[in-house]
Structures are given as C-alpha cells and as structure tokens.
Length: 252
Image (cartoon, rainbow, N blue to C red):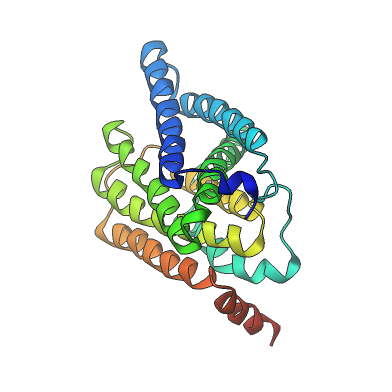
C-alpha cells in the first residue's frame, strides 16, 4: 500500500470529511441560488466546478493521481465488464428523448461530464482510495453508502419527489458499488467517470430537467431493481476470480 494512503490515520473520518466538503459546497451554492435567483443548473454547475478544483488539489497534495486511477487507462481485456453498467446508463433513452435542440444537448452533455468528473473524484477517487486500509469490500460499501445518502437531500431542496428520491438512493448505492468495483478491477477511474456522465446525460435528455415529479409504481420498482442488480454485480466483480469468469465468457 502506498505510504500516503497508509498514513491516513482514520479512513472513516477522512471519508466523512470528504463528504462534508461535498455537502457544504452544494449548500453554499444553494444559498447563492436562493439569494441571486440563478437557475438550479447554473447553481449545480458552479458548485461542482469549485468542488472539482478542490478535489484535484487534494489529489495533488496527497500524490494520489496514480493510486486513484487518473494516470491509468482501461485495458481492452476489461471492456466486457462495462457491458451491464453501459446498458443501465442508456436505459433512460427507452422512455424517449424530450430534448433535441443542439445547444441544449451540448449544454446537458457538458453538465453531465462536470457532474461525473466531480462526483467520481470525491467518491471513487479520493474516498475509495482513502478507505482501502479498512479492506476492499468495506471500502466499496462505505464509499457507496456515502455516495448514495446525499441523494436524499434532493427532497429538502424540492427537486425530487420523496418516493423517487428513496428509490434513486437505492439505485445510487448500486451504481456506487459497481463503479467502485470497476475502478478497482480496471485500475482506472475514467470508465466510471464516463459511465456516470452517460447515465446523467441520458436521464437529462429523457426528462429534460433535473427536477423529478412523482413516478409510477412500476418506474419506482424498476429504479430500485437497478440498484439491487448493480449492488450484486459490483460485489461480484470486485473479486479478481469472479471478474475473470465474466471476461472468460466473452472470450469463449
């Protein structure tokens, strides 16, 4: 284990500090949005830009660019591991596309990339790496829980229907487990950043907004099921033995 990771005295406190930075950044942006009446998308983009810069600075200070997967690219032999999360990322397109204006599409794409980079930097870059001393499986589960929990704050912000927020939090936990597993198995954080951005981008094009109203029971059940499936999948592939089984299926 690299010396800088081993020097983290309390990985759990380190993870909570990162979560605090992430939540405080969003809260400050929310206060600015309330005071100056800027759009919610501009608010989130501004907050994530500042948070991303802080995250990069932390990576630089800790010397974790390689350990956190930024200096590595995914190998071709690992691509089959991305098939299931890629399908999930594109599921929103099954509901159709409501946004077709070129400028809006480009704007949503840049917005999704910013969110993907920022959130992966904190949760699969800094947090997951800092939690490695407590064990791989525990690091995956704790970082995924801390990634999912803030999704419930969208209720108090008035952005999401409570039932959807609950279902999406379960889905976010599963997504976190799978993304963390991919980060560990591939040695690179870039697949998670790309898949995260694609997931958000497809949802934005399908819904046309970041605000989500009440959903049907079938839709809520489907969102919850995605979380369960991705949790099982992520925990399965985080093992070298099990990930190799999946890869061997594609080679046969």
